[in-house]
Amino acid sequence: MNLRKATGALSALALTMTASTAFADGHEGGTLASVTGNGAVQCGVSQGLPGFSNKDDAGNWTGIDVDLCRAVAAAVFGDANAVRFTPLSAKERFTALSSGEVDMLSRNTTWTMTRDTQLGLNFAGVNYYDGQGMMVPTSLGVTNAMELDGASICTNTGTTTELNITDFFRTNNMSFELVAFEKADEVVAAYDSGRCDVYTTDKSGIAAQRLKLSDPGAHTILPETISKEPLGPVVRQGDDGWFNVVRWTLNCMINAEEMGVTSSNVSDMMNSDNPGIKRLLGTEGTFGENIGVSNGWCANIIGQVGNYGESYEANVGADTPLQLARDGSVNALWTEGGLMYAPPIR
Image (cartoon, rainbow, N blue to C red; front, side, top):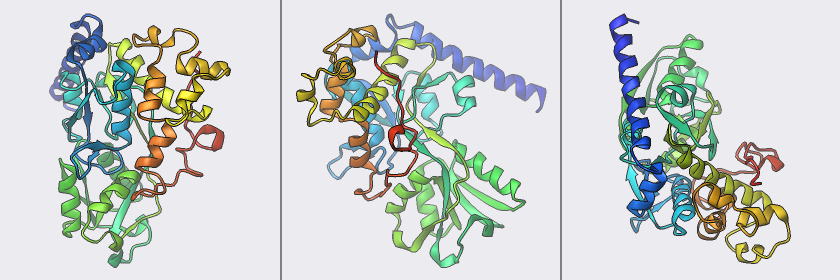
């Protein structure tokens, strides 16, 4: 790399991290105090990804990522509706977070080492384990990715997708043409119009964006998974208090599913003699107060949003248009052979 360019990149990085730290330090009590003062959580979401963060026909935001934003609001305010949504492209999401335009990101963002160590970001956990895939028109007759030498490929700018697809083709000594757009809907439109042979993104994203095609059934998702894409909520570095609220909101939802506490039985479970459930629901201990919220924080999350399994099945599960069956997948609970595992509340 050119030395001048390298120096410029490091300077830009330092400015980003300094701005992030300054934002946290410049608000007494950090982001949690700022959020409380504003009366709502400002949550950065995607510009429209069905099942994850997308507006329904009535204009209401829905999806598994949206549920996590609402859960944070329930933890902080006791009101899951105390949240405002900011739709962001992949390119602009990190700038919006580091500048303080949003309090958190919950928009299918991959946890990587660079993002975790050099961009002034903290990933608060994983709410969906994914991997990159590829979709092609069935009419091409392609059955696997090794048949794609010379293909044109549509994807988003500012994502790990660009790097992964480049690595895959270089590793397999194949050529390709990258056709990249900033907005997800632009990518889908280009692919649907025949501008490119392949659409690539996370497999969950393919399942979601496929629904927007003029003829979804005329396209085939290839079998290969070419990367690891752990997706999760993101906050700024330098504010451990807010990081704890977001992280433990997700942990609450996962632990609740494991313990069998749901939105429909949470009131009855308040009378449980199980020590783990008592700590989860705030009838024993001061775990909520320890992170700056009420001791009923987790009970509010479960009662108003649901546990992790409820959110998953309602938004992306086997009975939704995405049909992302959880049984046997990495997104199942660890007790059922998956990776969903949360530290205990104790």
